[in-house]
Image 1 (cartoon, one colour):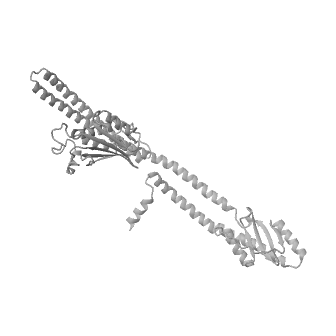
Image 2: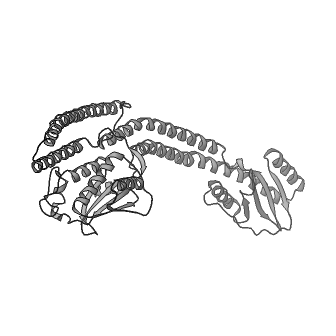
Image 3: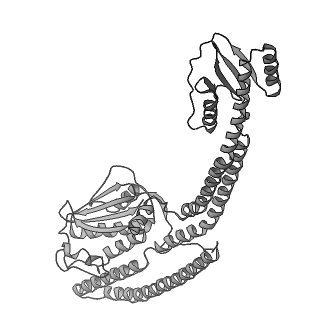
Length: 439
């Protein structure tokens, strides 16, 4: 039960650390203000309002009793005293119909208290209005063939401290929450920067010098990440340098062999040996490409349609088509994606005659379909062909050149972009390669 409740609450909680921290800081503050406000209104404001209302109704009751006194001179003198000393405006409306009902505001404690006290003193022969005038309350009490009309200041039944209290309890709370927002922004920014740097480095992008900042624990994590990044970068650079050296050392004797073959009189033997040397060079290029294709390249925002068209132009005379409903904009490493698409097109043309490339834009991803009309790949081999140096000796033919790195390189490039690659049966009856990139 507790586990289910915990999952239910998580659905409504924000996902980002900043907003979760803000809730942790702001919620107790808001609850405290609500409690203080409730206690204030219940213990102070409402009780003060009741006392003031009861006192005013007593004054009005005294005035009303004076009207019942037949001594007119005493009546007028007392009314004058009320108008002068109590800020009342008293008048008697003779022969006026008294038929109005009280339109009480249910949410106003002032209206409820006034109605309750008037009802206990006058029954149902009264009517009042607290909304028409900003600073005055109009009260009418039925008397003989008319009614007694009394205007009195609203502050006689409503404590003025309520507004001041509401202001001073709300304003400091807002100020403190704003200060908390600024503080939390500064505290979460180093975590966000660390996450972005880790994401870029995980995708193979170049990360500039990373400076740890923030709290001690965050600095420690950032410092250890930076040390790990530097160690991995050194390892990758050493591997690239080693492979560059191997490439240079191997190409030199291969070049000498080509020159020596040119002087051979046996042309048939010379051609066979030259073909073997060319295949060795292609294999060497594939090895180098597999190990160093995405390092040191920055991400750029480009139009993917234009990039694919540029690649297709290099295959002049080949049956390659591009289909796309809209222009697709995306952040990628251009050379890496070029190499990925080139490998897929080369594979398709090696085993088929036509290629169809389809671009689609979804809410969160950009999807690229590369279809060929070749013999395809058995479904059982879909996972195996993603492995480096794996070759199928069946449907895709074993007489083709290559070392089984085309799809491995494409898979590695897609993973480094945070995307994915999958294989399926093509509508052209060959192989369909689906590339999915985060947009």
